[in-house]
Image: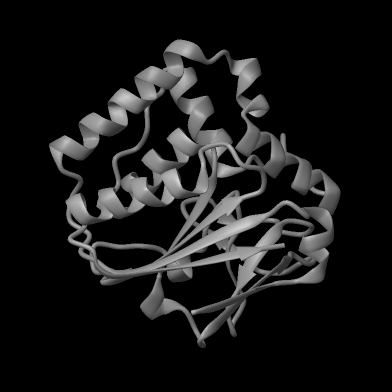
Length: 221
């Protein structure tokens, strides 16, 4: 999958780095071992983080700054990494979905990065562009209906938007039937080192999603 970053995003987020990882995978129910890792990470974050400090995490803060630079209000349309952290700090815990989704949430919690997870077989065409959402552009966010993605960073395939830092699209979402994964790690500002983030992802995918044929591409604004 070829991914390009449009100039509007480059100007708003000159420090942006994207790690695009593809792999052949399985997506079973989340194992007790993986869920224990998630619960431990959530407890560790809740123990040391005040609600007012969440948006000061470097990865989250930089994502919010990119939203503001594009004209989007991040308090109304929170990046997913911020939303996850807020849930665990409030003591609400995370929803248990499936291996791939829960694994991505674990990495997002630990890194501070909003991460897109897509079923490669549902993406139309052989390329994606990362641009900016337009007024009235349709986008059915997972579990929340139509999302106003105007002035928000958005990955598009040949049909339309598939992912933003706030939510991914129902059309290309991960399901138990997913066998080819595309994961886009959106690093608007570095928090967890890139190599450490990649090592964490590949380790988790190998342990819990039987990942093979992993390929990784690095892009920057």
